[in-house]
Image (cartoon, rainbow, N blue to C red; front, side, top):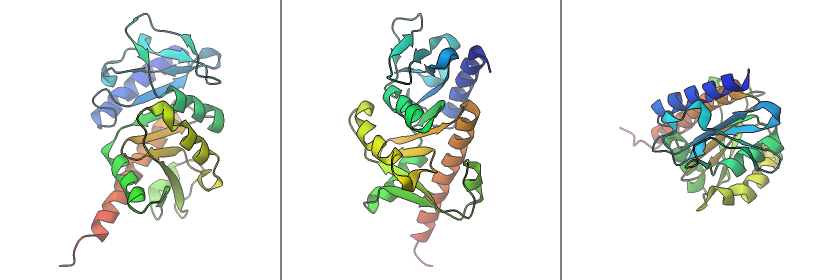
Length: 215
């Protein structure tokens, strides 16, 4: 894909994710590969479904420095920048989605209610949508605690990205906040985002069903 095609796809996906309630209220974010090895980063504090192709920042995944800015001086780079660039360095991610979906928050509640640092997902066909994962696997998804600023999540994120229990995971849930989900390119990040949201909904629905009183 050319950089312009990537920009167009990122704009399209933000619109799709907005319609699903994953990036509503100016929340959430996305990044994708730019020419020359940088990352295209959506701005912060704006309605994501209204972002245009010329409103992305370009950042260096090595240190998060800004390589190019949009023409609009009022735009600010997303606070997701530190998380996105860490996923790029530690996991080779070339596209990352930040979701504020309710299902991600509720899935994180399952872990925090048990004082656990992960969600164990099993016995679901959709697990095969995650690269390298089979439907017979028990997929461990890390859950970290929320902080006042997203840049303050990096210490916890570094810990779980280095934890061998989570080496097959392409996502991190942030309790009371949402999730970061990535892939090798924008299309894989899109697929993983859709699959993980299904898995979030499934594990929450199963827990709710288990807790229903017998009739």
